[in-house]
Image 1 (tube, one colour):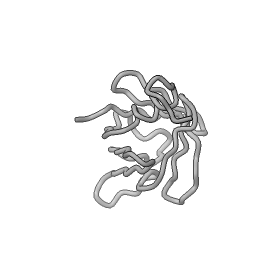
Image 2 (cartoon, helix red, strand yellow):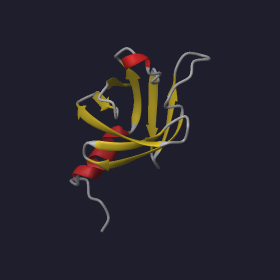
Image 3 (cartoon, one colour):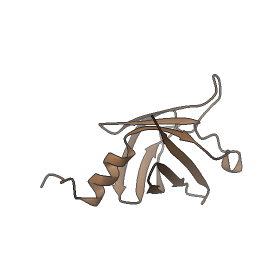
Length: 106
C-alpha cells in the first residue's frame, strides 16, 4: 500500500528534506557537518570547513520510524540515530547519547 500524506513515517520523511545548519558545537569532539542537505531518494550531503573531515559527508539515509533514521557515515557504516523534529529544528541523538542540533535554512 503506498504511503499517504497522513502517514507519520511519510510525514517524517518529507520533513527531513531540505537544507539544515548545525546550531550546536561538536559533541565530544565528534566532527559532524556544519550544514546538511537531505534530498529525495534517500541521498544526503554534509559539509564542514574547506578541508575538515565530517562523519556525514555524502551518502544515504533512511527514515525507519517517526523518530529513527539510519545514516551512512564517511566510513560507509550505516548508523541508526534517534531524532526529533520540532518546527524548523532537527535534533539527532547519536548511539552514545550526544545531541546534534540543526535548524532549517532557506
